[in-house]
Length: 177
View 1 (cartoon, rainbow, N blue to C red):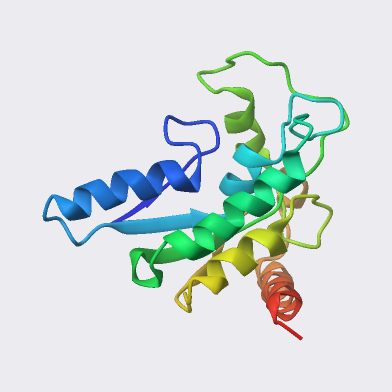
View 2: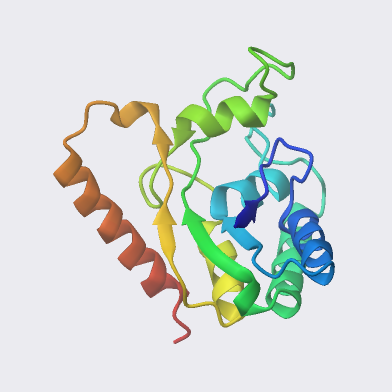
């Protein structure tokens, strides 16, 4: 079983789910691991769909994300990562209202319809998150997890090809040169 953080949920950061999974494993349940997600990580620590510029407006936003990704790389054992999901996010023309609508907070609504492939109009630091995960030594399964309202009705074969190309470009960007 893999536990994933949701940027709008109770366990909104990689560190939250890491601690939960670590506690469960220490309690004798070693069949649970992490499902890390580029959108969920950057969406909780770096971006904010309720702000005009789409960013968490903390003064040290970039430095805090850099520190968090370094901590992830140094803390999480590669064997604890079961799965890595990849997607980006659109910066919205109009910020989302900072209220619960249909049972979802803003980041939850953002997650449901504004998650393109990397390099397809998004703005999150997907490569930075991916590099940190690869730095753990993880070489397991990647999944493209997009919820892109702009692509509804797209031809599946062509979209799968775009997804493959997107992942290839992401991995190329993440290779140390």
